[in-house]
View 1 (tube, rainbow, N blue to C red):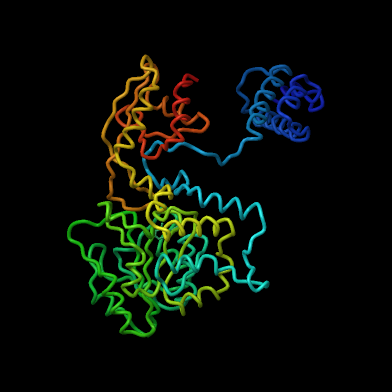
View 2: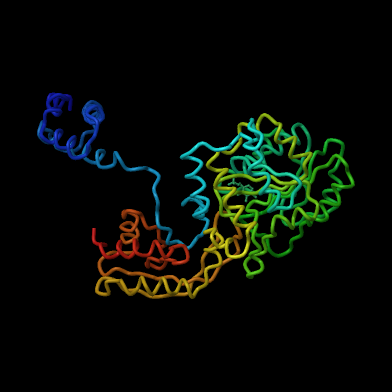
Length: 467
Ligand SMILES: *Cc1c(COP(=O)(O)O)cnc(C)c1O
């Protein structure tokens, strides 16, 4: 294939090609960028010739030019688009980890924009006219909403767990029930984080049963902490037993040096149990039982930005704040802005809480969902689509309340020419992409996670479906 090499067009020839000039004009792409792409393509083809893997027939200058411009045109069309973009979540999973977990409230977004666009008192005490403390902003609202003596926020809950273990249990022992050595989302493992932190994991009990005496027997001078981990994404059922938070608090209080710490995972600030949804304890309740420290995520049930919140005893939080790692794991001002606004919605209470999309979407009634379904169905081209309105279930997601299925209404769709996979592929190719589920060769759309504002976009997407 080496003889093909002489067919490779030279860069300067392609730069003078009409198509080059058109792309520059039409797409407003920097000349240098376009030249880079062309050179990249030429090199790639040259390489295929040299390693003998060219399999697109006998090349000519013309054919290669066409191929190169086709590729370059594709790069040019993507050049100004963002990789990270909005999608429409038709899966019904509210905290879909792959789709960015929690959507933020309007208030949180406004606060982000305001602090991003302007200077702020991030580390400035306006009253005294001098340097202030960065942690004050969040600590006040976090204390208020959790009832804790002290609180702080870090990058995410994984960081919170790491900081706590590293700062308070380095080279010491941490007792954890075998039934709680969880792995979350494939990248967070309690045992691995523990190892990384330099704390020594002491496993007690068995997978299905751990008794108080298991913990009791494991305590010695080396014990720094008893850690309870919320088994967020799985449930053990049947012959099981775990030790309650109260019992663990009681046990640790008998040993002055032993800290009780609960990794709550999701950390609900709203009582979903009240609506018959799950059995997630509210954070303030757990703290009221006397746990020394708790940590939880900002973007799970709480419905805020990605963050890890630590709340509990002042003496311990102070140690964490002073640790070098706290600086490395700290949250940025935009996260602070969003988190403060989200927490404020909880503090204000009443209907303000429903301004938080995660809470709102979990509580949305099937009547409301049915109404969205009807609007969608009415707009559907009936000669193209077969549809069925079905009762279904939505998941909370984000490794939260794995056993909870919230009743919902879904539309099951079939196209008169395309199979379900093709329909789902077409939906994902839309802008914004629509993410659906496939079941029994039907495409399912759950309208719990499709808002009123998103409906017109979705409807439009189906109106211009044929691609
Ligand atoms: C989700 C979760 C984590 C990790 O939290 P991120 O905020 O995703 O880092 C840690 N522990 C438990 C129990 C969890 O459920």
